[in-house]
Image (cartoon, rainbow, N blue to C red):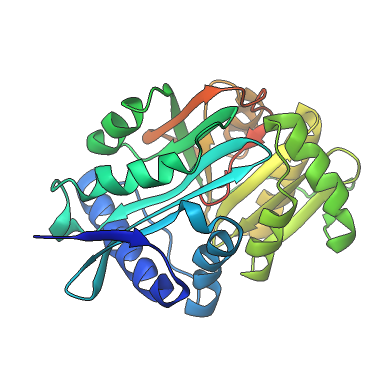
Length: 284
């Protein structure tokens, strides 16, 4: 089936969202990796609108007969390139569309000092990312209802006044600020926590969506604040690489169960220490 790959436009955002939902549902069926329930549509669209506004050169779609059947989104922050999204409709997979979309998104990072991708366990995705020359670090996830966790007194709700801290911590853990990329998920309904002077975290729909800190104790406090906030709801903590033993210990203490069939963090070049850090699937 002939698919045209072209730059994404604002008119494509709804179609990109729909193909992503189809692709992730297919991934769940084939690998067992659960996809969290989608947020309300208006909030979900922010995930596509924000990078389209900041990185139009990194946003691409595949189109067939007027329908969006694939999408790729890449962002560059302070010289760090990241793949935010690569999805192809299950009916169009294994036909080369994913490789072409990835090539266009990768070109957006030409000259970047470092690259990072968060990959599902899909063997085709992993092979494609390794072909770009990135190194693979396996990751796990933890999930369950946190038990016996109280919110640390040092952690408070974040506000717009914390933008400087958020940027500073992002530079410390990966060499690139997160400030604007935290505004977007907060607008989409994510809750922001701050450990004054030491770190921040966001969470939504039972998942830690981003966490970065200057030190492991602050990171642990932030993760425990999220655990306390979800109450009796199930929480998922993703992208647990060997560098994030502080998070493994916190998850174990809270009684969460671990899943090793999660995926991988792939990196190349200068990406900073990447710890203590739980990256965002959308904004890295």
